[in-house]
Length: 222
Ligand SMILES: *Cc1c(COP(=O)(O)O)cnc(C)c1O
Image (cartoon, rainbow, N blue to C red; front, side, top):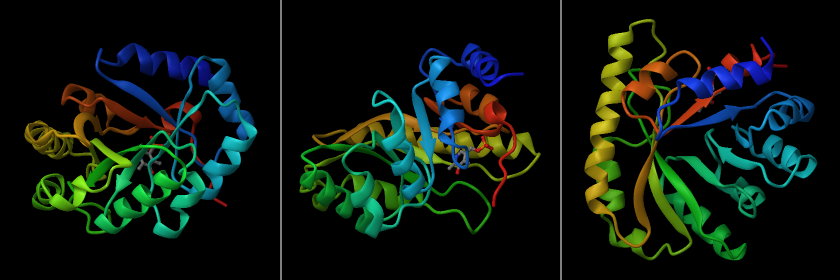
């Protein structure tokens, strides 16, 4: 199957509320161009330098989504152009995004990453931390960021019921967060689902699936 065919197949499986983010990390710009020519313009990357290089090389109507852990000292490189940061995992990072967005004269949309998996290694806030951030006075002062939703990664397991349970708990938190909408909190995006579990994620209410290998094949890490 070609990249264009893979994208078409996945798009045919989406619900009306859900969009596909093509996760292009590790793939060269010419591969992204193939997706672009097939009509797909939303790309997800997990490394700042790689995203910035591809941004320079590729058409300017591509939407760039940062999906990987973001270090505060690197925010400045993507602040001028990034469309959505999925991986806010500390208040410190959010403040830095606000600062760099202000410098760039923009308001940057951000998702808070929630730890839903059983693995210890994955980044993210607890449900309690999310509630405390979105209802905090501190957030009101950050005029150049807007929290537009939540992101989560399920446990890497073949146990579908476990994955479903985790996605469902994230959806419940997402619905609860909507009650806290205010000037810079506008909860509408729920980023969950990757190649191995996006079908479950769609059933559980995802609005953004992040799919890499099911479109581009396996990644070769150097
Ligand atoms: C790499 C990555 C994906 C996509 O993974 P696939 O299994 O290739 O679909 C999704 N989300 C995040 C945060 C990633 O780092």
